[in-house]
Image: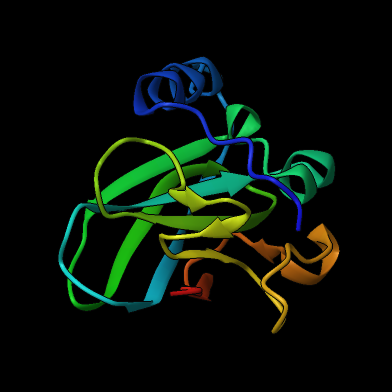
Length: 148
């Protein structure tokens, strides 16, 4: 199983700030729903990627946008309103203990995670299979996977 390159929430916030530089570009919304949240503990973190290498490596430091939503039993949703027109793939983490990392027991995740177009094995898909284009009705649905 590939390891996740998750950073602390402080580092995630810094990465988002760097990605949010001001430019005069046309933007569009993109909504993400995360299904299968097993409880209301902690938060769900959603990362948007616009580059295949960053998404496929789950390198959150290269995410172009991040959102942290209070966890709610069953599902949560977020809309990224200011993404430049383009295609994006998403990943999510249910950070139940709010430590900013995917909890692990050896090589087995103890918290839920999801990738757009994730298969049964729980591995990230190819960017081109997971990516959706921005637009008024654009959206992506992720289903969290828990191993325990």
